[in-house]
Image (cartoon, rainbow, N blue to C red; front, side):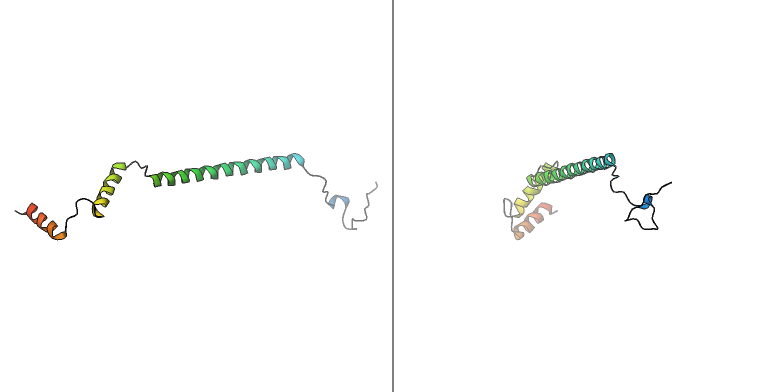
Length: 104
């Protein structure tokens, strides 16, 4: 039986111990490339969807499109009164009005 001798192989190694770099499993490499591209695409679409939902909720919040609109309108009316709008009464008059209203 003859053995294959190569100048690059030392005396301790056999021809089977030498790595062979031309044995690339192409179908497996293509499959993993396709899977990684698919996972990347799904990740990009998911992050884009989350961003769009969050940005739309911020836009809706700024525009005041809330379900509790009557409560919001009441708060705005109270803020208008407090900021110097209609219904401002000096404290002395307010005391007199309260005393007259609740006097027994």
